[in-house]
Image (cartoon, rainbow, N blue to C red; front, side):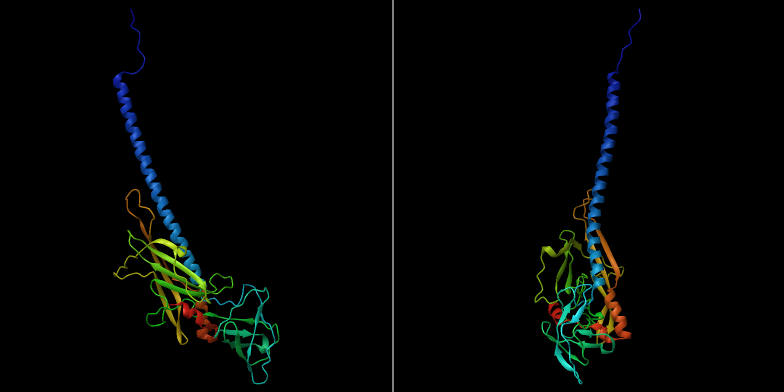
Length: 322
């Protein structure tokens, strides 16, 4: 008599299969958890990179624009509204400028304007007030004569207060001060970047404060001006010296100085702790050679050709520096 063959697995085989399945499942789950932590770390660092890159790109752009002088909106033709009759010996006269597109025009005392073209062209220095400007004219000029402000502000990046410049209330290692047509829209503005470093447990802040150069007072810093909220102290250099947020290369220009290069160094940390190390991850971003191109150009021109191209700092900007 033939015994019938049994189908299925024995208890021992089943238990062995379950053990193998559990081990494989554990390995897969461990790998997935590790992958999720790695992805979280990458996302965390990517967010940090994105925020600090946006801030440094803005800094680089605005330092490059610092010192630009504009009378009106881009492309507008600026002219005299009424004729100037200087007579034979010249005269001090009030004047009004108009823009071809109707945009507002800003002039300030001590600004140098170039009036007219051809043999009647002359450089005049604005006197009076910003609202009622005057100037000494040596030549006659018809209504509609072209007017421009050549050159740039030599102090578009305000030189530091430290020697050798000794600019009262100038830029510092933590406060970068600049002004001019920063946004390229014809509006003259004053901008302050303030770096307030902190620690890993209490990170600091990078602020950007912008106002018109004619503003009567500087707005107090608030949360709407925050560019970065995770700023740390920069690591010391190889010699153990403190690395500042902002450093300046200064050159003599006329009776004063100008900044021809700005170094920006910012250290930030991730907003969240790394899932693998349970620590905040720091990173240092350095821009070592950011040149304010308008200032550099006027430094070269004023030093070699025409000192009038270096426009003086408006008194309204001086009042905003403290």
